[in-house]
Image (cartoon, rainbow, N blue to C red; front, side, top):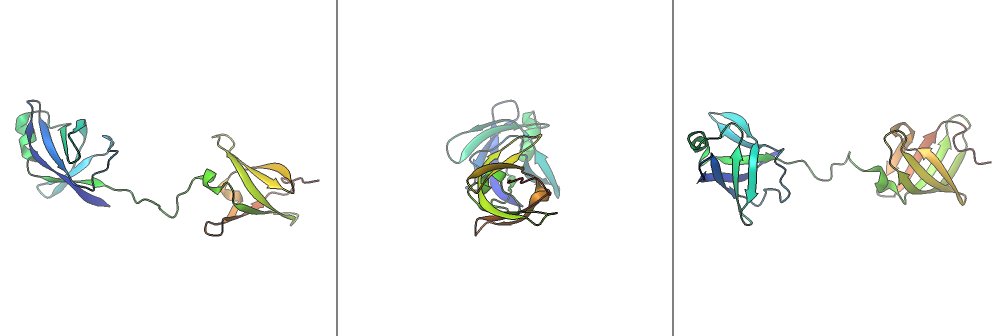
Length: 171
């Protein structure tokens, strides 16, 4: 989703720089890898900042790739620019460490063994991320992989894991 984020007001300096007015929707932590989007001759054109410097709460100066001269930058004066906003709190996104403290019901697929406990820690590793579960006063490590997560109830703070037979080995 794009949202209006500001306006290009006038030239600044001699190297194609411009003065920008920033709307309240402009992100406080602006990343210059994110293009500003303008409409030129009915086409959406991305502007990549080579230089961006805030001037107070509602202003900034910038230079754009491919607009390095005053003559080229003049084409941008008066244009409103937009930015691509990513929705906060997307229901599909969460971090595995957010599950720490959730109640866990784990069952082994082959044997049907069911146990309950608490997810007490998460160990992040590209090779082998792990959940630490406390089951019956004992710490048990299980792989933190999507295939084992049968259900997550965020409101009830509960997780249901279905694990391969023998993984719990609680004897």
